[in-house]
Image (cartoon, rainbow, N blue to C red; front, side, top):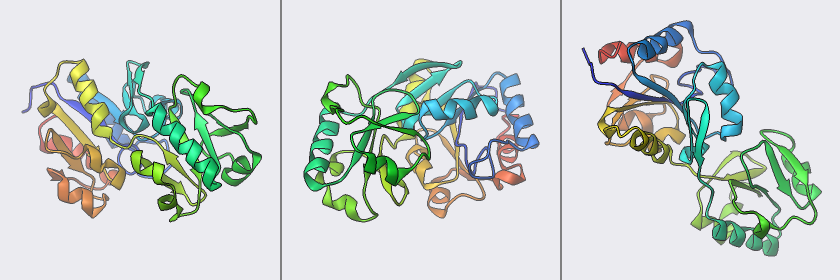
Length: 258
C-alpha cells in the first residue's frame, strides 16, 4: 500500500463530473476522494476556468484547493494565493493590432466575471455566456496595472490574420470569439508542489480532454479516464474506467492509494 502523501489534481468536465457543464460528482467518486482526504492526501481541482468562475464549482464539489486560469491561478484552503497576469506589453500590442485590422476585443483586468470592451458590437456578438460584458467607450488598455484575460471577436481561421496572437496562448470555445489566456496546467501544479516543498513525483493528475495534455508530463503520475481522447491516453501512465463508471475510484484502488 502507498503510504507517502500524494497530491491529486483532478480536471472537472469528463473527469470528476461525467456530464460536461454539470456540478455533480458520482457518489462512488465522492466517497473515493473523501477517503483520500481521510488518509491525509492533498486534493485539488485543475481547471482552465477563471478562478472567479471555478470557485463556485469548487465549493459545490467539496474542494478547497485548485489550479485555475489554465495554470496561472492558485487557490489553497479557499484563499487565492496568486493569479499571474498575461504579459501586459503583448496584450497592448494585440489590442493595437486588432484596432488596426478591424477586430473588436475585450479585456478582463482583474479576477471577476466582468470583461470590458469599447464597442457595443463586441457585446452583441459574444452575448452573456461565461462573463458579463460591459461597454466602456473610453477604455484604455494601457491604464490597467494587470491583464488577466483578453478576448478577440473573430471567425474560425481568422486568427492567423492577427500576428500578435502568435506571441500569446489562446483557445476557442465558441465560433464567435477566442479567449487569450494561459493554457498550461502543469505550471500551476508545479507551483503548488513547490509551495508545499513536495517532490513532483508525488503529484498525480487525472484528465480526459485535449486541454489536459499540458499536465500529462513525465514529472508525475498521469491517469487518463476511460472516456478520454486518444491523444491523452497515449501519454498516460494508466488508463482507468470511464468517469461515470467509478473511474477515479478504480484507479485509486489500483495504485493502493485508498
